[in-house]
Every structure is written in C-alpha cells, then in structure tokens.
Length: 433
Image (cartoon, rainbow, N blue to C red; front, side, top):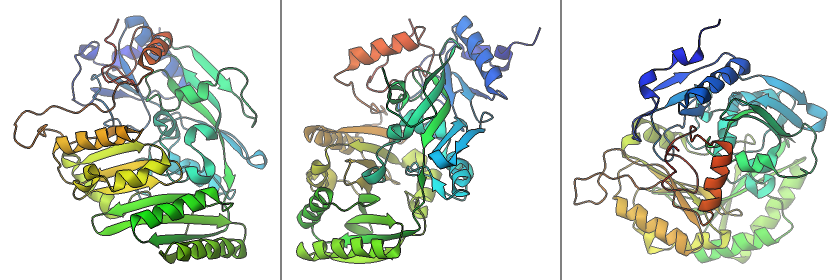
C-alpha cells in the first residue's frame, strides 16, 4: 500500500486554535491525482487545510488557523491553447507571469492587472492563476476588459471531500444554469481548491500610449465622468496619488494603429482643455504595466510589519468625495491606485499609522456606499496611539448576506476544513462543526 499523504503533515496541527501565526507546513503534491488523494485523506480525518498556489499572499486578509497548506505549484501545465478562438485552459498552479509569457508568443495576453506587489524580475511575485481567481481582485484594466471573473469560461475544482468537479467549458458562450465560476472567484479558498481554468484572452494591440491629467479634484472628476459617458474606449482609467505626486488621472489607449491612438488622445486632450486640465503624453511599453512602482514594492516587501494595504470598492462617482474627505486627508505617506471607471483599487502606506485612522477611513467608505478590506496590517501594533494592547482590525466586516454565505459554506465544506478563520463577508467565521 502506498504511504499515506497525511504522513507528510505534522499531526500536531490537526486542530489548532485560531492565531496570527503563519500556517504550519506546506505540502506540494506532484500532480492533481496525488493532490486529490491527499484531500480525501484530510477529509476522512477531519483535518483543516488551506488551498494555495505559490503562497505569495497567504498573509493577506484575516488570520488563518495554522493548518496544512496544500500547494498546486507542481500542477502548472498549459492544457490547451486555442489561439484562433482566443481561449486557453491551464492548471491553476501556473504562475501568472508564465501564462502571460506563453500567450505573448502568440501576440496575446490575459487582460488583468498584475496583483499588488508584483515585481516583474521575480516570476513568483505575481502568484498563480488560481490564486488570482481565488482572490478575485481586479484593477484599472476593468475599464475595457471587466473583472477577473468575467474572463473565466470554465473551471475545475476539488471539493473538500476530494471529489473533482467542473463547470463551464472551453468554448466562449453564455453559462446555462448556476454560474459556479463567479461563486469561486473571490472565495479566497474557503469553498474549494481551484484546479483548472479556461480563460478568455485578447490580442495585444500594437499601438498604445498613456495620458496623464493634472488639475484640481472637481475638474478631474468632471473630466472622468465625461470620458466614461463618451464613445471613447480607453484600456485603463485610474486615479493615482502618492506623498510625492499630487492626485492625477491616468488613461491608457490601445488600438491597432498609431493613427487610431492619436485620434483618441486628441479627443481626450481637447476634453481636458475644456475642463482646464493639463495633459501629458507618455509612452506605454506593454499591455501590463507594473501596478506598483518599484520603490513602493521594495519598501512594502521589506517592511511588512509596519505597512497597511487596503482594498477599496465603492461607486465610481464616490471616489472623488472619498479623496477629499477628512478621513483620507488625515492619512500620511499614503498611496492610491483606484480604477476610475469601476470604483475599485488599492491603497497602501509603507510606514506605521494609528489604527483609528484606518477605522475612520472604513467608516467613511461605508458612508459612501462602499467597502474596505484590510489585506495587510502591521504586526504588533497598538489599536490606538496611546495603548500598548495590539488588537488586529477585522479584514472585512459582516456582509448583509452573511446567513447565505454561511449556508453556501456549509454546502461546500460541511466539516469547516477549508481556510479556518477566513470566509469573505463574515467577520468571525463559523467555528468547526
């Protein structure tokens, strides 16, 4: 008889208390068959476990119980690339940077933003395709290409009991019945392990350019609203600000010819002149510019014990009120990259800030009809500037649909084995039943 896969896991972590400590051990099955066998054994023993890709962002979000981490990093094959149909099917452990490299050989790309913290010189820094889908985070490329979940046309998964399931297919068509892809996208590994994905891809348009707009906030917002309501088709549209760069809007244009790009830039510049804004043209070397400047990446990755990273989602028309709100004005050394047409994006600071400032920001976002998720927060910080007690803020708050979320969780994971301590939309996840 083959040795048990559970022998690879420390039995002492089978039922630990919730803690902020890192997960205890990573197991890397050599293929999906072995991974499925391991999951079955974990289910039979009732042991908790955490689905993972490269593990680059396991620290994001709520603290996890230190359970076994099951990695898909060896399950990283390209199963089928139908270049003429603009679809590709891959195993979920394929690194995102490798996926883009494979597609680039055919002058194609997967139109999503690099996850925050990506450094193109480090292939593992962008994580895996499965990890990207599990978190479901999208950025400014949503302006033309919509979100990650809109690019998925088929999905394979392994349930908490080790049973394999599939939804969708390898052909671009409308989904009949329940759309399982949308349920799994943004589930943070709490419902199942994503094992396979079929994705829509796009041709890389050869001509491209960036336009940077500067001016006061009301005029920038008026220009943004006019662009969104126009027939213009920017590839990206985003708010940007940092301590050493005043608030601005950045728009990216891509098309099949330089003449087409130049025509849109001329129209955008004319609109900027109408709103008394200054506009600067910049080259745009590729379809996926780094989402975070290298300096910011270095400072965050080297000092995560004193860094905040938040994810914002609110109506696009409410971004300007948030940016000029007292809650935002009190933040120092703060950076924003926000999708101007979709209302989502990231904010971060490489230096410590009092927790009450982030609590006030969250309340301000909620008052504008949005949500704020804490992806990273400093370790060992105080909840206020005057107290020595350190209490982590909840990564997310209870959603109005909390009872439904918990009911779906019970259906997918009745033994509460997956990602204990982490269930999107539930601030205090159900304890194991």
